[in-house]
Length: 393
Ligand SMILES: Cc1cc2nc3c(=O)[nH]c(=O)nc-3n(C[C@H](O)[C@H](O)[C@H](O)COP(=O)(O)OP(=O)(O)OC[C@H]3O[C@@H](n4cnc5c(N)ncnc54)[C@H](O)[C@@H]3O)c2cc1C
Image 1 (cartoon, rainbow, N blue to C red):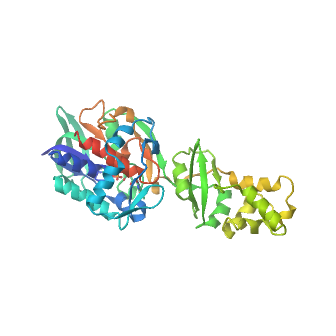
Image 2: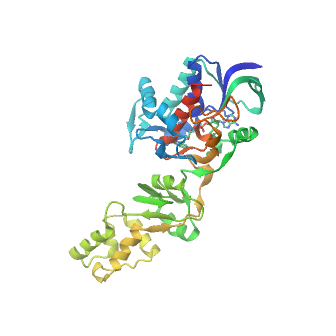
Protein backbone atom coordinates (compact mmCIF):
# COMPACT_ATOMS: atom_id res chain seq x y z
CA UNK A 1 0.00 0.00 0.00
CA UNK A 2 1.38 3.42 -1.02
CA UNK A 3 0.48 6.11 1.53
CA UNK A 4 0.34 9.72 0.38
CA UNK A 5 -1.08 13.00 1.57
CA UNK A 6 -2.81 13.71 -1.74
CA UNK A 7 -3.96 11.68 -4.73
CA UNK A 8 -5.16 13.50 -7.82
CA UNK A 9 -7.19 11.46 -10.31
CA UNK A 10 -6.61 12.84 -13.83
CA UNK A 11 -3.36 14.25 -15.22
CA UNK A 12 -5.00 16.93 -17.35
CA UNK A 13 -4.70 20.69 -17.02
CA UNK A 14 -6.40 21.01 -13.62
CA UNK A 15 -4.94 17.84 -12.07
CA UNK A 16 -1.29 18.54 -12.96
CA UNK A 17 -1.53 22.16 -11.88
CA UNK A 18 -3.18 21.29 -8.56
CA UNK A 19 -0.64 18.51 -7.87
CA UNK A 20 2.28 20.91 -8.35
CA UNK A 21 0.75 23.48 -5.96
CA UNK A 22 0.12 20.88 -3.24
CA UNK A 23 3.61 19.39 -3.62
CA UNK A 24 5.15 22.87 -3.33
CA UNK A 25 3.57 23.04 0.13
CA UNK A 26 5.50 19.92 1.08
CA UNK A 27 2.61 17.47 0.64
CA UNK A 28 3.35 14.05 -0.84
CA UNK A 29 1.32 13.90 -4.05
CA UNK A 30 0.61 11.29 -6.74
CA UNK A 31 -1.34 11.95 -9.92
CA UNK A 32 -2.99 8.85 -11.40
CA UNK A 33 -4.31 8.76 -14.96
CA UNK A 34 -5.73 5.85 -16.94
CA UNK A 35 -4.56 7.19 -20.30
CA UNK A 36 -1.47 5.99 -22.12
CA UNK A 37 -0.59 9.52 -23.16
CA UNK A 38 -1.32 12.35 -20.76
CA UNK A 39 -2.21 15.95 -21.49
CA UNK A 40 -3.96 14.97 -24.74
CA UNK A 41 -6.39 17.87 -24.63
CA UNK A 42 -3.66 20.36 -23.87
CA UNK A 43 -1.66 19.17 -26.89
CA UNK A 44 -4.72 19.33 -29.15
CA UNK A 45 -5.96 22.65 -27.83
CA UNK A 46 -5.96 25.89 -29.75
CA UNK A 47 -5.10 24.05 -32.98
CA UNK A 48 -1.86 22.78 -31.36
CA UNK A 49 -0.92 26.18 -29.89
CA UNK A 50 -3.03 26.06 -26.68
CA UNK A 51 -5.13 29.11 -25.98
CA UNK A 52 -3.98 28.91 -22.37
CA UNK A 53 -5.90 31.87 -20.91
CA UNK A 54 -7.75 35.05 -21.73
CA UNK A 55 -6.62 38.52 -20.66
CA UNK A 56 -10.22 39.53 -19.93
CA UNK A 57 -11.30 36.40 -18.02
CA UNK A 58 -13.97 37.09 -15.40
CA UNK A 59 -16.85 35.15 -13.85
CA UNK A 60 -19.07 36.52 -16.62
CA UNK A 61 -17.37 34.23 -19.15
CA UNK A 62 -18.61 31.05 -17.51
CA UNK A 63 -21.81 29.03 -17.59
CA UNK A 64 -22.66 27.63 -14.16
CA UNK A 65 -26.00 27.22 -12.38
CA UNK A 66 -24.58 29.44 -9.63
CA UNK A 67 -23.22 32.50 -11.50
CA UNK A 68 -21.20 33.58 -8.43
CA UNK A 69 -19.42 30.28 -7.83
CA UNK A 70 -16.34 30.99 -9.97
CA UNK A 71 -15.66 34.47 -8.52
CA UNK A 72 -13.51 33.45 -5.57
CA UNK A 73 -11.14 31.06 -7.37
CA UNK A 74 -10.78 33.32 -10.42
CA UNK A 75 -9.84 36.25 -8.20
CA UNK A 76 -7.35 34.28 -6.10
CA UNK A 77 -5.49 32.78 -9.05
CA UNK A 78 -5.96 35.07 -12.01
CA UNK A 79 -5.01 34.98 -15.69
CA UNK A 80 -2.14 37.35 -14.80
CA UNK A 81 -0.73 34.82 -12.34
CA UNK A 82 -0.72 32.14 -15.04
CA UNK A 83 0.70 34.53 -17.63
CA UNK A 84 3.49 35.26 -15.11
CA UNK A 85 4.28 31.54 -14.85
CA UNK A 86 4.32 31.15 -18.64
CA UNK A 87 6.72 34.09 -18.86
CA UNK A 88 8.92 32.59 -16.10
CA UNK A 89 9.34 29.51 -18.29
CA UNK A 90 10.28 31.72 -21.23
CA UNK A 91 7.34 30.48 -23.32
CA UNK A 92 6.67 32.95 -26.11
CA UNK A 93 3.00 33.81 -26.66
CA UNK A 94 0.77 36.25 -28.46
CA UNK A 95 -2.77 37.60 -28.37
CA UNK A 96 -4.68 36.21 -31.32
CA UNK A 97 -7.94 38.08 -30.85
CA UNK A 98 -10.30 39.19 -28.05
CA UNK A 99 -7.70 38.71 -25.32
CA UNK A 100 -7.02 35.07 -26.29
CA UNK A 101 -3.39 34.13 -25.54
CA UNK A 102 -1.74 31.36 -27.57
CA UNK A 103 1.77 29.86 -27.53
CA UNK A 104 3.87 31.15 -30.42
CA UNK A 105 5.37 27.73 -30.89
CA UNK A 106 3.48 24.73 -29.54
CA UNK A 107 1.01 23.54 -26.88
CA UNK A 108 3.77 21.10 -25.91
CA UNK A 109 5.41 24.02 -24.07
CA UNK A 110 2.47 24.27 -21.67
CA UNK A 111 2.40 20.52 -21.00
CA UNK A 112 6.17 20.48 -20.46
CA UNK A 113 5.81 23.39 -18.04
CA UNK A 114 3.11 21.60 -16.01
CA UNK A 115 5.14 18.37 -15.87
CA UNK A 116 8.24 20.30 -14.89
CA UNK A 117 6.31 22.08 -12.10
CA UNK A 118 5.20 18.64 -10.81
CA UNK A 119 8.69 17.18 -11.06
CA UNK A 120 10.40 20.13 -9.36
CA UNK A 121 7.92 20.02 -6.48
CA UNK A 122 8.12 16.22 -6.20
CA UNK A 123 4.63 15.19 -7.36
CA UNK A 124 4.67 11.84 -9.19
CA UNK A 125 2.59 11.17 -12.30
CA UNK A 126 1.51 7.60 -13.09
CA UNK A 127 -0.01 6.72 -16.43
CA UNK A 128 -2.17 3.73 -17.42
CA UNK A 129 -3.44 3.51 -13.87
CA UNK A 130 -7.03 2.21 -13.71
CA UNK A 131 -8.81 3.05 -10.50
CA UNK A 132 -10.96 0.04 -9.67
CA UNK A 133 -12.70 1.32 -6.54
CA UNK A 134 -12.53 4.01 -3.89
CA UNK A 135 -13.31 3.50 -0.23
CA UNK A 136 -13.73 6.23 2.40
CA UNK A 137 -11.91 5.53 5.64
CA UNK A 138 -11.78 7.61 8.83
CA UNK A 139 -8.80 9.72 7.84
CA UNK A 140 -9.00 9.65 4.07
CA UNK A 141 -9.49 7.26 1.17
CA UNK A 142 -8.21 3.90 -0.06
CA UNK A 143 -7.98 3.35 -3.81
CA UNK A 144 -7.61 -0.05 -5.44
CA UNK A 145 -5.94 0.26 -8.83
CA UNK A 146 -4.40 -2.00 -11.45
CA UNK A 147 -1.07 -0.77 -10.06
CA UNK A 148 -1.73 -1.62 -6.44
CA UNK A 149 -3.40 -0.03 -3.45
CA UNK A 150 -3.05 3.65 -2.52
CA UNK A 151 -4.10 5.53 0.59
CA UNK A 152 -4.45 9.30 0.86
CA UNK A 153 -5.79 11.98 3.16
CA UNK A 154 -7.14 14.19 0.34
CA UNK A 155 -8.56 12.93 -2.92
CA UNK A 156 -8.82 15.37 -5.83
CA UNK A 157 -11.03 14.42 -8.77
CA UNK A 158 -9.79 16.09 -11.96
CA UNK A 159 -11.16 13.72 -14.58
CA UNK A 160 -12.51 16.42 -16.91
CA UNK A 161 -15.61 16.13 -19.10
CA UNK A 162 -16.91 13.70 -21.69
CA UNK A 163 -15.67 15.34 -24.87
CA UNK A 164 -13.24 13.56 -27.18
CA UNK A 165 -13.47 10.03 -25.69
CA UNK A 166 -10.44 8.92 -27.69
CA UNK A 167 -8.28 11.26 -25.56
CA UNK A 168 -9.21 9.41 -22.35
CA UNK A 169 -12.45 11.21 -21.40
CA UNK A 170 -14.64 9.17 -19.08
CA UNK A 171 -17.64 9.65 -16.77
CA UNK A 172 -15.57 8.41 -13.81
CA UNK A 173 -15.62 11.76 -12.00
CA UNK A 174 -19.42 11.85 -12.12
CA UNK A 175 -19.53 8.28 -10.81
CA UNK A 176 -17.30 9.24 -7.87
CA UNK A 177 -19.62 12.17 -7.11
CA UNK A 178 -22.62 9.82 -7.18
CA UNK A 179 -20.84 7.27 -4.98
CA UNK A 180 -20.48 9.96 -2.32
CA UNK A 181 -24.05 11.22 -2.69
CA UNK A 182 -23.26 14.49 -4.50
CA UNK A 183 -25.79 15.86 -6.99
CA UNK A 184 -24.96 16.26 -10.69
CA UNK A 185 -26.26 18.73 -13.25
CA UNK A 186 -27.24 17.05 -16.55
CA UNK A 187 -24.35 16.95 -19.00
CA UNK A 188 -24.34 17.88 -22.71
CA UNK A 189 -21.81 18.82 -25.36
CA UNK A 190 -20.75 22.48 -25.52
CA UNK A 191 -18.55 24.56 -27.86
CA UNK A 192 -19.60 22.19 -30.61
CA UNK A 193 -20.59 22.53 -34.31
CA UNK A 194 -24.26 22.34 -35.31
CA UNK A 195 -25.62 19.67 -37.63
CA UNK A 196 -28.41 20.62 -40.04
CA UNK A 197 -31.80 19.34 -41.17
CA UNK A 198 -31.74 17.76 -44.64
CA UNK A 199 -33.25 20.77 -46.46
CA UNK A 200 -30.71 23.21 -45.03
CA UNK A 201 -27.85 20.76 -45.43
CA UNK A 202 -28.60 20.26 -49.14
CA UNK A 203 -27.87 23.93 -49.81
CA UNK A 204 -25.42 24.86 -47.09
CA UNK A 205 -23.05 21.88 -47.37
CA UNK A 206 -22.21 23.20 -50.84
CA UNK A 207 -20.78 26.28 -49.13
CA UNK A 208 -18.22 24.22 -47.22
CA UNK A 209 -15.12 26.31 -46.48
CA UNK A 210 -16.84 29.71 -46.62
CA UNK A 211 -16.58 31.80 -43.48
CA UNK A 212 -18.60 34.95 -42.74
CA UNK A 213 -18.56 37.56 -40.02
CA UNK A 214 -21.81 37.17 -38.09
CA UNK A 215 -23.62 37.83 -34.88
CA UNK A 216 -25.16 34.60 -33.58
CA UNK A 217 -27.86 34.86 -30.93
CA UNK A 218 -30.02 32.50 -28.89
CA UNK A 219 -31.60 32.70 -25.43
CA UNK A 220 -30.69 36.38 -24.88
CA UNK A 221 -27.00 35.76 -25.55
CA UNK A 222 -25.08 36.74 -28.64
CA UNK A 223 -21.55 36.42 -30.02
CA UNK A 224 -20.03 38.40 -32.86
CA UNK A 225 -17.32 36.31 -34.51
CA UNK A 226 -16.98 34.19 -37.64
CA UNK A 227 -19.26 31.37 -38.73
CA UNK A 228 -17.94 28.60 -40.98
CA UNK A 229 -19.94 26.41 -43.36
CA UNK A 230 -18.67 22.82 -43.34
CA UNK A 231 -19.71 19.69 -45.21
CA UNK A 232 -21.32 18.43 -41.98
CA UNK A 233 -23.05 21.65 -40.87
CA UNK A 234 -22.12 24.93 -39.30
CA UNK A 235 -19.04 25.71 -37.22
CA UNK A 236 -16.70 28.65 -36.53
CA UNK A 237 -16.23 30.57 -33.27
CA UNK A 238 -19.65 32.30 -33.20
CA UNK A 239 -21.39 28.95 -33.69
CA UNK A 240 -19.27 27.13 -31.08
CA UNK A 241 -19.97 29.91 -28.59
CA UNK A 242 -23.73 29.98 -29.12
CA UNK A 243 -23.96 26.15 -29.10
CA UNK A 244 -23.34 26.23 -25.33
CA UNK A 245 -26.45 28.38 -24.87
CA UNK A 246 -28.67 26.51 -27.34
CA UNK A 247 -31.19 23.83 -26.39
CA UNK A 248 -32.44 21.18 -28.84
CA UNK A 249 -35.39 22.40 -30.90
CA UNK A 250 -34.52 26.09 -30.56
CA UNK A 251 -33.83 28.52 -33.39
CA UNK A 252 -30.57 30.46 -33.66
CA UNK A 253 -30.63 33.88 -35.29
CA UNK A 254 -27.66 35.13 -37.31
CA UNK A 255 -27.07 38.71 -38.32
CA UNK A 256 -24.98 38.25 -41.45
CA UNK A 257 -24.26 41.97 -41.78
CA UNK A 258 -23.41 42.75 -38.17
CA UNK A 259 -21.46 45.96 -38.55
CA UNK A 260 -23.82 48.10 -40.59
CA UNK A 261 -27.15 48.51 -42.36
CA UNK A 262 -27.37 46.32 -45.43
CA UNK A 263 -30.44 48.26 -46.64
CA UNK A 264 -28.45 51.50 -46.79
CA UNK A 265 -25.74 49.71 -48.81
CA UNK A 266 -28.28 48.25 -51.23
CA UNK A 267 -30.09 51.59 -51.67
CA UNK A 268 -26.79 53.27 -52.41
CA UNK A 269 -26.01 50.58 -54.99
CA UNK A 270 -29.48 50.99 -56.55
CA UNK A 271 -28.95 54.72 -56.89
CA UNK A 272 -25.47 54.37 -58.41
CA UNK A 273 -25.98 51.27 -60.56
CA UNK A 274 -29.71 50.65 -61.06
CA UNK A 275 -29.16 48.03 -63.79
CA UNK A 276 -26.89 45.84 -61.71
CA UNK A 277 -28.35 42.55 -60.43
CA UNK A 278 -28.93 42.15 -56.69
CA UNK A 279 -26.49 39.22 -56.67
CA UNK A 280 -23.74 41.42 -58.10
CA UNK A 281 -24.40 44.14 -55.53
CA UNK A 282 -24.22 41.57 -52.74
CA UNK A 283 -20.87 40.19 -53.87
CA UNK A 284 -19.37 43.45 -52.64
CA UNK A 285 -20.09 42.14 -49.14
CA UNK A 286 -20.17 38.32 -49.47
CA UNK A 287 -18.34 35.60 -51.44
CA UNK A 288 -19.91 35.00 -54.87
CA UNK A 289 -20.47 31.28 -54.20
CA UNK A 290 -22.39 32.15 -51.04
CA UNK A 291 -24.60 34.75 -52.77
CA UNK A 292 -25.47 32.40 -55.62
CA UNK A 293 -26.58 29.63 -53.29
CA UNK A 294 -28.22 31.72 -50.63
CA UNK A 295 -30.61 33.84 -52.71
CA UNK A 296 -32.82 30.91 -53.78
CA UNK A 297 -32.42 29.34 -50.31
CA UNK A 298 -33.77 32.52 -48.69
CA UNK A 299 -36.50 32.80 -51.38
CA UNK A 300 -35.08 36.06 -52.70
CA UNK A 301 -35.63 36.88 -56.34
CA UNK A 302 -32.51 38.00 -58.21
CA UNK A 303 -33.18 40.91 -60.60
CA UNK A 304 -31.76 44.36 -61.45
CA UNK A 305 -31.78 46.66 -58.43
CA UNK A 306 -34.10 49.20 -60.12
CA UNK A 307 -36.86 46.58 -60.17
CA UNK A 308 -37.01 46.36 -56.36
CA UNK A 309 -39.96 48.54 -55.32
CA UNK A 310 -41.39 49.75 -52.02
CA UNK A 311 -40.23 47.61 -49.11
CA UNK A 312 -38.66 44.90 -51.26
CA UNK A 313 -35.01 45.88 -50.67
CA UNK A 314 -35.78 46.22 -46.98
CA UNK A 315 -37.05 42.62 -47.00
CA UNK A 316 -33.82 41.46 -48.66
CA UNK A 317 -31.76 43.24 -46.00
CA UNK A 318 -33.94 41.76 -43.24
CA UNK A 319 -33.31 38.24 -44.55
CA UNK A 320 -29.55 38.77 -44.08
CA UNK A 321 -29.83 40.61 -40.76
CA UNK A 322 -32.20 38.01 -39.28
CA UNK A 323 -31.32 34.61 -40.75
CA UNK A 324 -33.21 32.07 -38.63
CA UNK A 325 -31.78 28.58 -38.48
CA UNK A 326 -33.10 25.62 -36.52
CA UNK A 327 -30.13 23.24 -36.12
CA UNK A 328 -30.86 19.53 -36.27
CA UNK A 329 -28.48 18.94 -33.36
CA UNK A 330 -24.80 19.11 -32.58
CA UNK A 331 -21.84 16.92 -33.49
CA UNK A 332 -21.86 15.78 -29.84
CA UNK A 333 -18.95 14.74 -27.64
CA UNK A 334 -16.97 13.44 -30.61
CA UNK A 335 -15.90 16.99 -31.50
CA UNK A 336 -17.16 19.15 -28.60
CA UNK A 337 -14.50 21.18 -26.82
CA UNK A 338 -16.29 20.99 -23.48
CA UNK A 339 -19.00 19.33 -21.43
CA UNK A 340 -21.70 21.48 -19.91
CA UNK A 341 -23.07 20.40 -16.52
CA UNK A 342 -21.31 18.03 -14.13
CA UNK A 343 -20.84 18.04 -10.36
CA UNK A 344 -23.33 20.52 -8.89
CA UNK A 345 -21.38 23.48 -7.49
CA UNK A 346 -23.87 23.70 -4.57
CA UNK A 347 -22.13 20.58 -3.28
CA UNK A 348 -18.69 22.26 -3.27
CA UNK A 349 -16.94 25.06 -1.41
CA UNK A 350 -16.18 27.88 -3.87
CA UNK A 351 -13.05 28.71 -1.83
CA UNK A 352 -11.44 25.26 -1.81
CA UNK A 353 -13.48 23.01 -4.18
CA UNK A 354 -13.94 20.54 -1.30
CA UNK A 355 -17.21 18.62 -1.17
CA UNK A 356 -19.30 20.10 1.66
CA UNK A 357 -20.55 16.67 2.70
CA UNK A 358 -17.32 14.66 2.32
CA UNK A 359 -14.21 15.86 4.12
CA UNK A 360 -11.09 15.47 1.99
CA UNK A 361 -12.85 15.01 -1.36
CA UNK A 362 -12.26 17.74 -3.98
CA UNK A 363 -13.45 18.32 -7.56
CA UNK A 364 -11.56 20.68 -9.91
CA UNK A 365 -11.64 21.65 -13.58
CA UNK A 366 -14.21 20.64 -16.13
CA UNK A 367 -15.75 17.75 -14.16
CA UNK A 368 -17.85 20.26 -12.26
CA UNK A 369 -20.73 22.35 -13.55
CA UNK A 370 -18.49 25.20 -14.72
CA UNK A 371 -17.99 25.75 -18.45
CA UNK A 372 -16.12 28.61 -20.02
CA UNK A 373 -16.76 30.38 -23.29
CA UNK A 374 -14.43 29.69 -26.18
CA UNK A 375 -11.20 31.71 -25.84
CA UNK A 376 -8.93 30.31 -23.12
CA UNK A 377 -11.50 30.48 -20.32
CA UNK A 378 -11.72 26.71 -19.79
CA UNK A 379 -8.01 26.42 -19.14
CA UNK A 380 -8.16 29.43 -16.82
CA UNK A 381 -10.82 27.57 -14.82
CA UNK A 382 -8.54 24.52 -14.67
CA UNK A 383 -5.68 26.70 -13.33
CA UNK A 384 -7.81 28.72 -10.86
CA UNK A 385 -9.79 25.79 -9.43
CA UNK A 386 -6.64 23.63 -9.35
CA UNK A 387 -4.68 26.32 -7.57
CA UNK A 388 -7.21 26.98 -4.80
CA UNK A 389 -7.56 23.25 -4.08
CA UNK A 390 -3.75 22.94 -4.20
CA UNK A 391 -3.45 25.38 -1.26
CA UNK A 392 -5.50 23.25 1.11
CA UNK A 393 -5.34 19.55 0.17
C1 LIG B 1 -10.08 19.92 -29.22
C2 LIG B 1 -10.10 20.76 -27.98
C3 LIG B 1 -9.49 22.01 -27.98
C4 LIG B 1 -9.54 22.81 -26.84
N1 LIG B 1 -8.93 24.02 -26.86
C5 LIG B 1 -8.96 24.80 -25.76
C6 LIG B 1 -8.25 26.02 -25.72
O1 LIG B 1 -7.50 26.36 -26.66
N2 LIG B 1 -8.39 26.81 -24.61
C7 LIG B 1 -9.14 26.42 -23.53
O2 LIG B 1 -9.22 27.17 -22.55
N3 LIG B 1 -9.78 25.24 -23.52
C8 LIG B 1 -9.69 24.43 -24.59
N4 LIG B 1 -10.32 23.21 -24.57
C9 LIG B 1 -10.99 22.79 -23.32
C10 LIG B 1 -9.93 22.30 -22.31
O3 LIG B 1 -9.08 21.38 -22.95
C11 LIG B 1 -10.57 21.63 -21.10
O4 LIG B 1 -11.59 22.43 -20.56
C12 LIG B 1 -9.52 21.35 -20.04
O5 LIG B 1 -8.56 20.46 -20.55
C13 LIG B 1 -10.18 20.76 -18.80
O6 LIG B 1 -9.15 20.42 -17.90
P1 LIG B 1 -9.37 19.23 -16.88
O7 LIG B 1 -8.06 19.02 -16.21
O8 LIG B 1 -10.58 19.45 -16.07
O9 LIG B 1 -9.69 17.95 -17.79
P2 LIG B 1 -8.74 17.25 -18.90
O10 LIG B 1 -7.68 18.17 -19.35
O11 LIG B 1 -9.69 16.68 -19.87
O12 LIG B 1 -8.04 16.06 -18.09
C14 LIG B 1 -8.77 14.99 -17.54
C15 LIG B 1 -7.79 13.85 -17.33
O13 LIG B 1 -8.47 12.85 -16.57
C16 LIG B 1 -8.13 11.59 -17.09
N5 LIG B 1 -9.18 10.64 -16.76
C17 LIG B 1 -10.46 10.60 -17.21
N6 LIG B 1 -11.08 9.54 -16.72
C18 LIG B 1 -10.20 8.89 -15.92
C19 LIG B 1 -10.29 7.69 -15.13
N7 LIG B 1 -11.38 6.94 -15.09
N8 LIG B 1 -9.19 7.32 -14.43
C20 LIG B 1 -8.03 8.05 -14.49
N9 LIG B 1 -7.91 9.17 -15.23
C21 LIG B 1 -9.00 9.59 -15.93
C22 LIG B 1 -7.99 11.82 -18.60
O14 LIG B 1 -7.20 10.82 -19.21
C23 LIG B 1 -7.34 13.20 -18.61
O15 LIG B 1 -5.94 13.09 -18.62
C24 LIG B 1 -10.25 22.37 -25.68
C25 LIG B 1 -10.84 21.11 -25.68
C26 LIG B 1 -10.76 20.31 -26.80
C27 LIG B 1 -11.41 18.94 -26.76
